[in-house]
Length: 235
Ligand SMILES: [Zn+2]
Image (cartoon, rainbow, N blue to C red; front, side):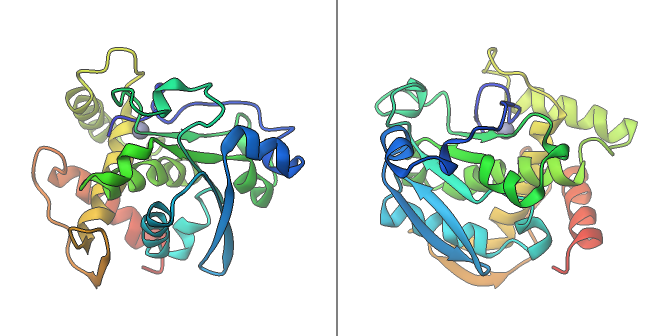
């Protein structure tokens, strides 16, 4: 997935944060706020249409609780403030999504961290058949950050991940491409393929063995992700 320049490493300082300020401030910056309840928790959405909201809810709903706890509670579509022009139509979509990960996140209270950090999407993402691979890719960066999947790769897997990332992202010279992109792609394909979605984007509701062993989801990558899933979640 083409995501934020910086490859999910868009680190920023976390406080004071916009979501904790007066509502008119973040509404101006981020657009209208709505919320949904997923797995018993409030998820805050900015500038989401009803259809976009449903797609995100579908994706969040199928994460096992251990992974759900790793992902943010704040999501944005586009950039009403006009700061990030690559997030505003009709720019050709250099940026599909961004994982905004806090600097020094391990020193921040985990519940607060989930309000400080957020994921943003270009609105065009939701109109595409690949919408779920983009959504799960960004969620995958947060799962990786919490569990240190990339960090714990062995030498051989790390080399495979680097080669994979450079192949998949070869046309994006501005981006810092590294092993983390491969792992985010792994989570993306693991979920987007295991849970089949109908063409219009509704979830069929059954889990299947993810299709694998192709250029985008090679066997070694499936093995890394599937092993992590089996060892760290209740499935
Ligand atoms: Zn990424």
